[in-house]
Structure formats: structure tokens, C-alpha cells
Length: 294
Image (cartoon, rainbow, N blue to C red; front, top):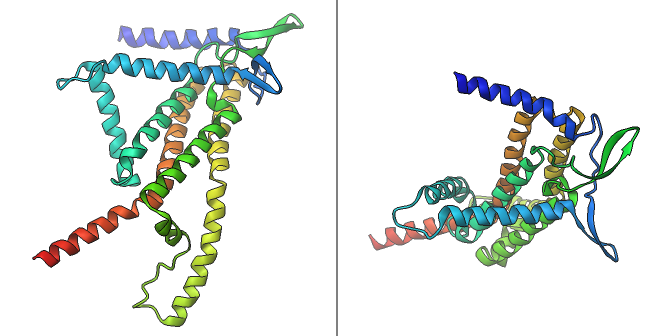
């Protein structure tokens, strides 16, 4: 009971202390702040530095937690293995067993990296400590030292392009050109059970639908990046606009988790829509082979 009371008091203290770091009601700039100007339009921004720092932190923590893998796992290794097994159970049915070994490291990296970046904006001082100047006796931060990578539109575009590039490589490697073209433009109706005229009409329909599907594929990087950026940047503005009221911290924790899951799930679904067909064909071939053998 005493511990619960102390925890509640700590939350109240946090809620009252955090506004000291922020300018009340001040909106967050959509642009990342330049920390080092390299010239020629190139610069190192605070979101880039945050992304590098979090990447190094994730790698270091995993190496420290797992150490040298053992048959009888340590506590850190057990935690990492439990997390991996949980994510495997989520993504393997979507992606398919054939492409899963190549896809899984990418999906795990996406989920952990995006989740930590989404939650970075909840730390005291993030976005509110940095270079600035006094206006009417009040300090205004113009170049914060730290900014979540996913709160920068350039960062979410980079993540979406990596996802799209990996999707292209994986589907051509594990599905092949023939299956991809059939999946996009092929007639999925059974020719033996469909009248010839109707089958021809359906062929034209599937062809037109295929071109629409190609267009939707081309805009996937944009939709992935906008969805992630909009939610994280909106949450960042909400926290600043409400002077970091602690109630919204819990909401942003949930939003950060949901957005990391959505981005990773959509990346896996896009791959599974094409690559997961192979598993069905393998099961059919194995069944036919077993039936012929008997």
C-alpha cells in the first residue's frame, strides 16, 4: 500500500515538474533542428543523432543481455528469447514459413526501433532542452538537442523506403516474377468451372484491378510514413500544448506501442500477401505426393 502511494506521489511530482522544461502552449516545429551544418544543404539534425544513439543503445543492451548464448539461458538471454518467440508467433503466420527467416530480423528491428523512438518523446527534457533565446523574460528553445526519429517526417520516410526496398527484394527472391505477375494481373477464377465468356470478362477485370493494385503499392511508402509521423508528431504537440500533463503520458505510451505494431504488421502483411502463397502450394504438393505414394 505504501509503495502504491509513493508511486502515485511520484507521478504527481513528475506532472508538476515537467512544465519547467517546456514553454506552455508552444507548438513543436515540424522540421528537425540542425545541430551541425555541413554545407551544401547537408546537415546533422537532432532526430538523426537521436536515431543513431538509440540504435547504439539497442545493440549494446542486446549484447549485454544475451552475452554469449548458452544452452541454459541467463535471465537476460531468457528475456530476449521470450520477446523473439512472441514476435515470431505473431509474424510467421503472416509472412509464411518460406520467407520468414529472411524477414524476421527486419521486422524485429523495425518494431523495437520504432517503439523506443516513439517513447523517446515522453522523456523529460526531450524537445525542450537545447539552444534558444529569451523572449519577454521567458526562455524559448529553438534548437532542441534531442528529438524522436519518428517525429521527423524525413525519418519516417526513410523507414518506409527501407520497408519498401526490403519488400521488393524479398518477393522477387522468394516468390519470383511469374507468381508476382499472376498475383497482380492473373485471372484467379477456375477455368474449368467458369464459362468461357465470363472467364474472358474476369480476365479483363483482374487486369484492370492489377493496375490499381500497382498504384496502391507505389504509394505505400507515403502512407506508411505519413501514418507514423502524423501520430507521433501529433502526440508530441499534444504533450507540449498541455504542458506535459501526466495523464497524456499513458495515452502516448499506448499510441507509441500501437504505431510500432501497425508499421511492422503492415510491412509483414505486404510481404505475406505474395510470399505466403508458396506455403499453400507446398502443402498441396506434399498432399498430392503422399496420396500418389499410397
